Image (cartoon, helix red, strand yellow):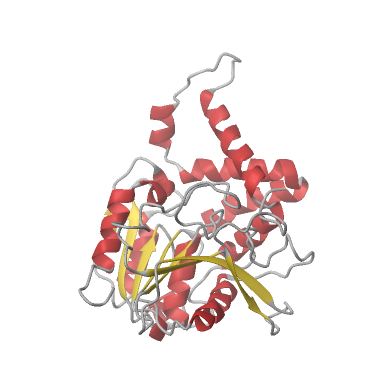
Length: 337
């Protein structure tokens, strides 16, 4: 199965190791990447959190150790919205790109979004970052971002939540359940099936229809089937099936209001200046979920809507609209970057 393994090129990865017991784990390590320079006051740090099959490689090209290009390359680098900030992107606990996960530890315990954030808090401490200038995330990364702002409100100055939710919905859990059953039946073939199911939900009906319609290939198969096969094959080459299960179960368990008096009470803990945005064609994380976040977070104003035919994946594709939101959240401030 895919994923980074010891002996592979490190690429841009750095590692943080936490030697003390952490839940059911004897310790853990997080792989992470950074861009820019932390200023003397440690006030220019931005935390970027990846989605389910993402990793720490936010920016940069394909290179040894990084089989895919940076997934938010439009945001990080000279002249881009996060230019001048110290950008930190960890591979999530339970992932398969260098962080501790089931690829490394058979019998890896169930973990939650809250556990993943607790691990990232240790990373922030290690880096000497007491307060993030901003925490950014979409989809699963947005789940972690809102958990950061609720569990550590004093450490998050500003917050960007994209195409995400305060709690996983029944439909999201149902779609994930079908994927989990496929993987448990056959990890190799099942991961490809899981990706096909997921990818349908990541795109919109109108985009698939406009792009493929009922077009047939020379072999008699529908073009849209070949498209799904292509994305399934890509994922199985670079991702680990056990990590997919672990992270999907963490997403299913996500409920920022759990043991906090409910979602409304939890969101009132957020003190960060916040922008919440959704995608008008997102059928996996519909706008109503972002409306709940925007209405419940005291530092948020109106919901921002990304207009796109690309569905949920638009938060990764619509670079100009996302970049404008980042610039609005963390504008260039003379003398602070």
